[in-house]
Amino acid sequence: MSMDILNDTVQENVAFNQSFASSSIFNSLLTAAFGLVLTLALYDYWRRNTRAYRLLKNMPTVKEYPVVGHGHIVLLRNNPEVLDIFVDLMREGGDTLRFSLAHINVVAISNPVDVEIFLSGQKHLEKSVEYRFFHPWFGDGLLVSKGHHWRHHRKMIAPTFHQSILKSFVPTFVQHSKAVCDRLFAKVGKDFDCHKYMSETTVNILLTTAMGVKTQPEMKTSAEYAQAVMDMCDIIHNRQVKMMYRMDALYRWTNMRQKDNKLMNIILGMTQKVVEERKSNFNADERAVIDKVAAVSGKKTIKEKKEGLRDDLDEIDENDVGEKKRLALLDAMMEMEKNPNITWTDKDIRDEVNTIMFEGHDTTAAGSSFALCMLGIHQDIQQRVVEEQEAIFGHDMQRDCTFADTLQMNYLERVICETLRLFPPVPLIARKAEEDVKLASAPYIVPKGTTVLISQFIIHRRASVYPDPDKFDPDRFLPERTAQRHYYSFIPFSAGPRSCVGRKFAMLQLKVLLSTIIRKYKVFSSRTDKDFRLQGDIILKLANGFQISLEPRAYA
Ligand code: HEM
Image (cartoon, rainbow, N blue to C red; front, side, top):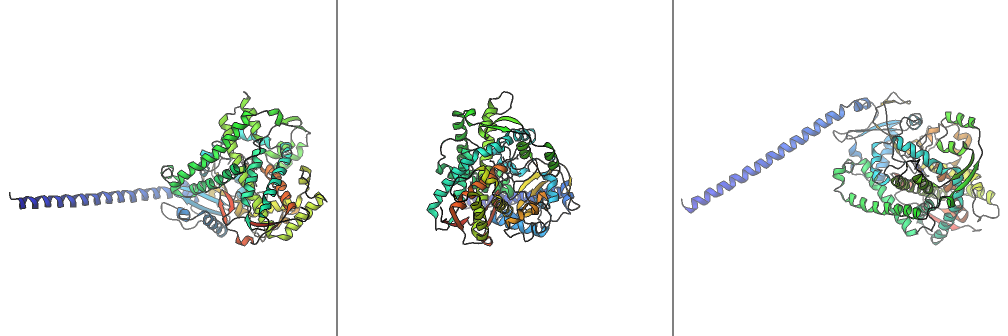
């Protein structure tokens, strides 16, 4: 055979092999594509034919697509946009709205009569599946735990927020409030974002009260911790609402996961140091508050409980007698760890410290920052706050605030409530329906296993409950006006057995902090609340900053 013929034959073979290879790749791709489409079609068929989906089908909703359901709404959107869309949809949709993120069914409710079904009572205490993204951070801490573990921990932790403990914290609240006033002096006359100052302060307050840290916390560490918490919340929120981040197998390959690791090192590193230090210098007796308490009428408690107005915190404050040794949170947990009759481990301590350091600081930082902005915007309301402070402090406006003073700050308390109504630091909570639930407001059934979204942000702006709902009007919280509203129409701290365990701590701290700042400075704002760009990722914030400016008061 000549060389030419041989070359031709080889080339023909190569060409044949190439075309065979490319056609078999094409066939493989075609088969894979067909397989994928078939799998997705079967998945969608299954999704739409589950019992839960069929029960929910008639509930108001917006356009959904095959497979992803409503996942497209959040896919390429940032957090402020997601909140805007959710608020618009809820306002258009009325009391109830159904969503699905692929096969996960979500029902958002906003009528207080429906909210009461899920928050009161012992039935729906478990948090929805979306809280699982907190587990690497909080472990089995109060916010995310369930069943017996939660009940046991709640029972042991709630007394560490007893009124007598809180009273003993007031001088520390004052000390940190005065310290932030000093730091704020550098900002006088300038427009600045007050949130950073509030979050450093609330971290420090928690460290030196609930956590019993003796030395003055380092401002740099507190600021780094507070920033890491905010960034971590952003990541968790993304994981909760975006399908691609929900799947652990995909998430682990993303850049977000690497950032997550770094942030968790900062967050857990700080809390671990706190626990270790406290363990090394722990002396329970030195920190104990000895409380002599007299019994109050149990009848009142039972009557009010029937009306759904009370929780375990009120019962603890009112129903004990005798002399008690009370310890703040971390010290109490260390005593429990040593007590052979109580199941309480080192991990339990760490989980609760991580939970409370987060829940306790970012919420009050947002609450106090929003309050300062609102006082800056509404000068007439600020003036009324100052008049009340003058009535309490008389000629000595710079003296330290006491617990007794805070009991007289009724108008400031109304300002705080109205701030928490319009800008609830926790804008949304979610529960898992533990059984099929018939709603009270409409003939719909929420099937067992559904994620039930309860948005304080939406509920607090219901025009039927709060006329002219966007108006900042603290007098909505005059006792006679509050009495006319449904109890579950104002739930910044949630409500019922699983409500915020730090509610009284938060209100007391906010009063002391705002009273101290407002007696020292006049607060101004060059914006109105129409300029606020709200961002609702776990904790409500302003994407465009909590801008205010300050001027020292004449007597300061
Ligand atoms: C303005 C300040 C605060 C607001 C608006 C707030 C709001 C809330 C809300 C809405 C919940 C329920 C969360 C859910 O169901 O997902 C909650 C739970 C919780 N909060 Fe707060 N909170 C505040 C301050 C605090 C403080 C100061 C502490 C502790 C020092 C604290 C500790 C907790 C804990 C441990 C839970 C979980 C309770 C449980 O599940 O038994 N919070 N908070």
